[in-house]
Amino acid sequence: MAKVIAERMCAEVEGDFVVFLIGARINHLWKFWKWWPVAAAMPRMLAELSRNPDMGLMNYYICIGPHGPVLVQYWRSFDALEAYAKARESEHLPAWTAFNRSVGSNGDVGIWHETYRIQAGAYESVYNNMPAFGLGQAGKLVEARGARQSARQRLSAGG
Image (cartoon, rainbow, N blue to C red; front, top):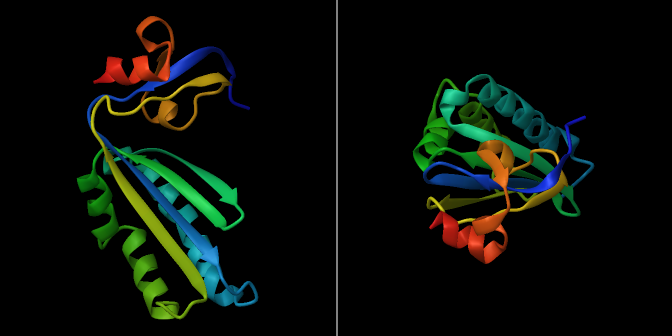
């Protein structure tokens, strides 16, 4: 189990970065042959990215919600994210091609993603009684004191 940090902390990331959200929704649970390949492809991609930090993925975590899984990813840049998505030798492109061939727009499995470019200092975070998490793992954790006491101060300190 990860070590809980009792102090109030906030994340700092050097430079611009990208937050990428991606999720899936199983619309027909009984059609496991349609959604299982989608579910099985993501762990392979995450393993590949974890083995190769130079590809640009800084951190990720997975949430399971009422509409399906959501994967939150922190990338060094949009260029790194796009390069991975398009690389013929990566796990992503073959999985994406297979999805389009098998599912496409037939309604069996929904997929979505959102990409946010974050300018240096144009974000804030706070963690209390938490292990390193999310953006705090992607960057570094610093104490949320003094000029980092409130959300407004953290945003002002970063910008």
